Amino acid sequence: MLKTIMQSLTANRNAVDLALRQIDEIREEIITQKAEISRIETAPVPVAEALAAFDVWAASAAGGAMDARGVSALLDPTGGGHGLGVTTPAVRHGGEMIFDARPAVQTLLGLVISTGLPTLRRLAQEHLTAAADGMETMSASSRRKKLAEAQRALLDLELAEEAAIRSLEGAGVPVARRADASPAAVLAADASLPG
Image (cartoon, rainbow, N blue to C red):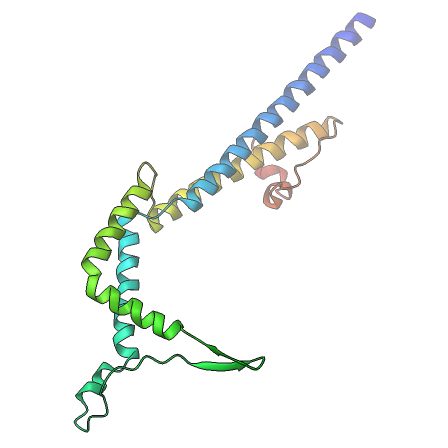
């Protein structure tokens, strides 16, 4: 009889050890899945999308330079537009005059962009292509789809972990939950857990 009790205890201990190892394996998969989610979230956009953003920015900077300087004032027949003055607004701070050079710098940048846009675009394209070389890029729609799939896979893992924890707890074995355990998994109804 003692031998039977010892065999039963050994079998139970082995079952508990196996279940704890399975929880550890699930937790390692959770870490891997979270890393995959982070990779998807931070994957660069395709070079074509980055260039489109550059084009919008460059057009705005170039157009803004002309608009800010009132180029149309040169059409004034009274001669009021004898040049395109670049102002540097000033404010008094602590007894000193502080000049804000941002409008002048923005104007200069816009004028440089407008005169050299094809060259700047080519340089931007070369830089972006080199920076993205060997990296997986993702469009917004692809990122949304992959992110939804990865988050679903993470939830499935967390539900499996919770099912294993509850199974052990039901057998009287206490198991600590991860501090970052998903509330959706921890609060899930038993019927919605796998197994």
